[in-house]
Length: 173
Image (cartoon, rainbow, N blue to C red; front, top):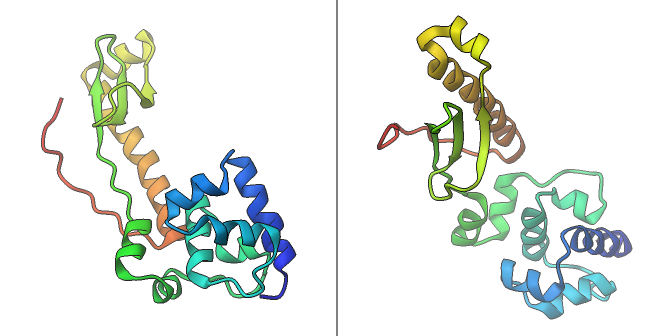
């Protein structure tokens, strides 16, 4: 590693931004706290790539962004070489089931199916627009949300080389 000071500074900054301690992060990414502390202190001269990958993936940054190196960003396939299959899959895959419902007030609401309290997207058409759309309010709202989700998924695919699986919902509301 060329510049351990940059790594130390960047890592410290990420911890501060998330208001995390090395102890908390250690538990979250399964890396010894002593290793994380030595990274911050700059006493590790050649950090383990597996550790760097776990830290970078946790904070959603590229390894080169963490290390301050501008050359050759590590690809997903390169990262997999350093991690076991289980570690790589656990860190790479996050499944979220979403549902689109029409609430009691007539708004279209997108939320996680397991968390009914947190609304991710809410579409509330004015009465004038509702009268113009007649019975197509729900269909138009669904298309608006599908377009937004498609855009987000494409960004994720481009950034993380993710695989998105679109499944038929088990139930409709």
